[in-house]
Length: 287
Image 1 (cartoon, rainbow, N blue to C red):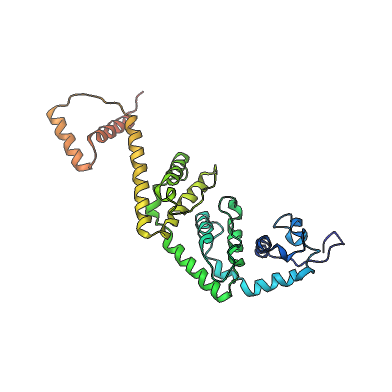
Image 2 (cartoon, one colour):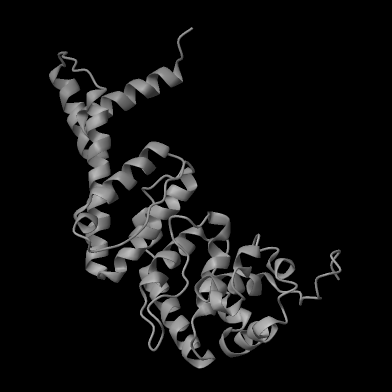
């Protein structure tokens, strides 16, 4: 099967099985003879890398047996989307904190700060697969996680003010979150790995806001209100700095017209004058 004839034939593993096996061996290295864990070059080639070890200590039986006892069917994990980085970031942070009954204190879970975006999905599935729970218990547990995600995800109206194309806003929001009392007091653990990608920054910000539901829905709502209000105040202060005060006189009739427009439009006098000037320039552009 392989070019190297010294290696015995190894079973062809699915991507899901490869990620699980690497995760499992990371915390159960005794499944291989001493030193052979270092032969694993990558997750993609793990079956080739260990092709002469499949007969040792029943590794073939380990893979098939674990899949049979602990893998949920693919369709029961379809609610986890490989393309939804926001959901994956929420999961990768929340799965690490779940205590499992009758399991060792140390088990595999992907580190939020070192797992690359393209690997998040597969490593999350590997985490679930590596839980040593029966299919029935795992199904119930994953069902609870799915329900929690549905409750935790904030509505679009609460996040519409965040513009993932605005890198300055993304950096400001992450800095605000890192300095907030919830983080400083250790009430929430959520990782913000360094990234230059505004889309990934945006996904982390949303993931954190979703994550706050684990404190309480009230705490989540309060924080969202505060961060959005603080951003609005920041924009207002910056816009005011860009303006220069201008003084001029208006006739009594012009003042009455301005007051009427102020009531009708529910805008400030300054904004009305700016809009009227802008409309005048657009309608009769200067030669």
